[in-house]
Length: 130
Image 1 (cartoon, rainbow, N blue to C red):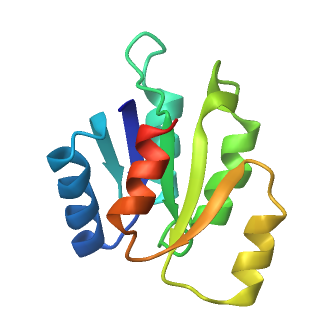
Image 2: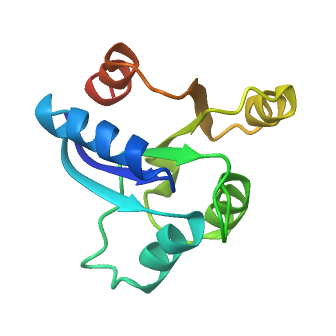
């Protein structure tokens, strides 16, 4: 079990299902949900250091309004947050666009590209074996 997981995704049905699965299987002590990359960045930047929860794992959607997954990754790389290099980031998307897959493969901080819906086996592998 990990201490904290961020779900950065605008798909409310997917978020509800994945959060429920994480909680039912007790895979993470805490799950924080952000509807887009900007809200997640705002949380990381504006929350006082002694109160911010740095996730062990980020499940990051590719396509979202305001700031998509790619924009989040660019901004996240620039953040000066102790421990951020220990965070495992997984791209999670329904996109099968080869350009997205290739782009993800060329970004070292992305552990893996997963297709929606994420199955329980993948979720356990991500959150239990960390």
